[in-house]
Length: 100
Image (cartoon, rainbow, N blue to C red; front, side, top):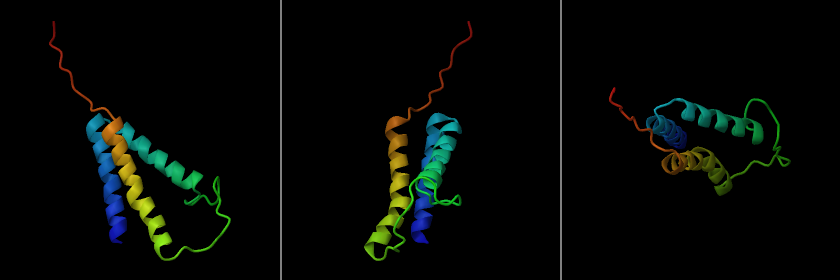
């Protein structure tokens, strides 16, 4: 549960940071919908069943492999989003113009 809490917190921080930099809800909304689409449709992990990438072997991973798989979804993805927001999203600046 600690890993789920950390991963959810990191992803929430990434969405909040994207909102803070852009002063718009559209980027966090788009990033969230994009991640949901990739996770559910491409990786077939959601409630829709098998879609694009279908696992042929139904072997349950144990030991370090399953831990890495779990951590990659909950920790690595939020860090990738945080890096994207940090380096590729420009900060919105408010330019005040004086009336003429």
